[in-house]
Image (cartoon, rainbow, N blue to C red):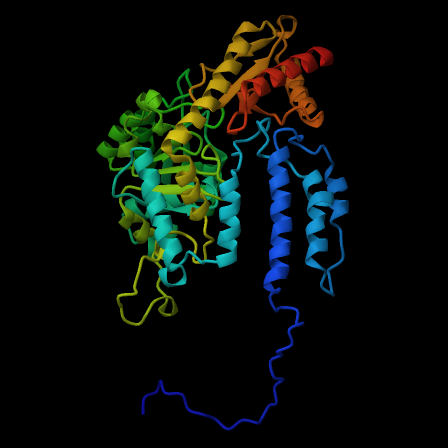
Length: 508
């Protein structure tokens, strides 16, 4: 008899309670009419939110303690009426939330969120699709595959590229580096890991000034260590110095390191700089290195013909990452990783578990995303991107992108024309722009200007004029506006700039 056959054993009889059929049981769905009424109420709240979004303050100016106190509730023991729960949106949640979709939200690089994306998320949640395996999500899987193909086509990337949606830029870049590491390791990385006998330190190269924090997180996640991230000197325009890169590669190899990846900026985080992709692709090809483009901020700008020169050579990259929840305006989360050779993703992430796959292939065996990325269970991020692309089309997004860039260029013109501000970067090509409040009487005192610029950003935010964050350019504190919202107009830039000038004069 086969040892796999189950043998029944004598066991005592246990009486179990019968499942309830009571329609008042806690986990029975609401009747259709009750749920429809609740849904209409929610849609009314969302509709009003979008109707008011251009006028509401982008930041609530409440302290953490104030907000925490509102939600410091006991664990519920008895259930509440759904309408009562929904009422907290208007009284507690919205008044104490930052409004990233505001036309005057200029901090970080946050997209504005669109309406069809909000509806898509509701639909995706209702279906509760798990984008791990094809059988758990047939339509959703094929929509994600098609959306990835659309995005690759939009930016002029490889026609046969593969890829997937992830939570954000950190996970997209982590997945890209993991794929690069598996592709370029000269030993069995899956079996032996980074501690294999004879393994040497694997290193990554990118420009020093604009190194994004996501790569610091990625090298930690992958166990490479911060010293693996090699920061190459940058030129005056914040782009990577290719000659310095070549010299560093030679020196590191001589010191016993193993370079495996070069990262190029496709619109850097503080000044929107573009590295020379063709030059980096040449270096990578000559040295058999993986070439990754971090296009979180700007890769989608490749849809604009007037920016074509900045994207020459991006099609030669082994991988490209960007965030649809930034410039594309879809709600969070929707980061995207494209890879020239989809097989390299499978090499990096393939999963082996008998319960995930049919015992034998059949006509219902489809594409399984758990073999192409770091997640086994995945939410349906693609639906909102798919719907957004269909609503706006490439033409619509070109118009949106041009408007945000025009706002950034207008801000640059205001800075150039003012005696109280100074230029710290070239004229912007994207929607990100950094500049400094620096009246002539204080230009000899960098420490005082650092403090003053920080206080201006704090004041304009707490006074609820706009949400502004500072950064450091060449070591000095500057204002930094990410004009990523499709709702921002020239008047928003004018009024924000004038408020900054007035607050600066007041604080002096």
